[in-house]
Amino acid sequence: MSTRVEIAPDVTVDEADISEDFIRAAGPGGQNVNKVATAVQLRYDARAADLPDAVRARLIRLAGQRATKDGVIVIEAGRFRTQERNRADARERLLALVARAAEPPPPPRKKTRPSKGAVERRLKAKAGRSSVKRLRGRVTED
Image (cartoon, rainbow, N blue to C red; front, side, top):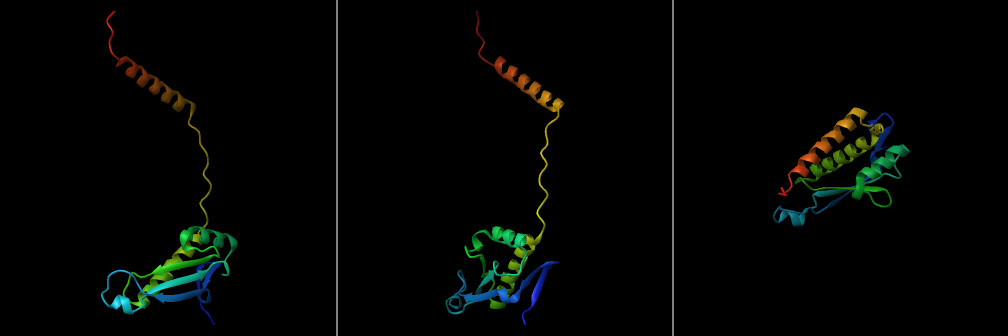
């Protein structure tokens, strides 16, 4: 039996949809970095997951380059020196991404127009600046 992590009332992540591969981490670490596979590559199949369609679409869009063409989200974690901490970090990042996708989208922006008085004041100020710059020109003696 697999466990499910609840993100929102209708959004859950099934542990069975997550696969992990351990790879060698890049960066400093001495001889140990060449011998031990501590970094984790987490894969989450968003297309096959039991998610609402709107959440699935937002999740793949938010994942950006981390999502493959097949809808698999790949998260690599190698910040820490142990497999367990990297594994927990990758899972936290995946759950945060799914939680962000589960949030409702913001309401659409309402277009506004400047008032008639604001337009008149702006045009009057522009005309004033224009006359000041025109009068700064070279003085000709006739």
